[in-house]
Figure 1 (cartoon, rainbow, N blue to C red):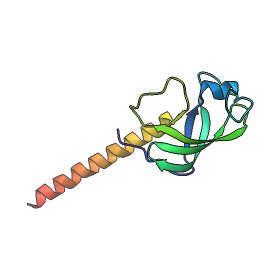
Figure 2: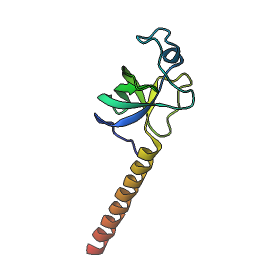
Figure 3: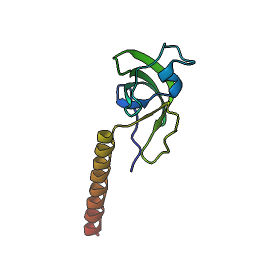
Length: 117
């Protein structure tokens, strides 16, 4: 699987930390979130392929920000305590299809080059 490059405006899933859910040590009373569902988030700033700032919307529609959030790529180990973002399954499947097209196209180009010799 190839790396999915983050860009501003892309939607990802954000998994809040337990302290965010309870309000302990964060700038919100508490974040409304289910233990088994991520929160919707939009990439606001890209630091690297694996580090972004997010605009997060909790389960009640309240918006808040998170900075320097780890963005997991397929195959990365998920932190047990949350506080990370990841691509949605649809985005991963689309990236896989795109990578497959690129691989097929490269193979066709190699065949064309071989037939010219």
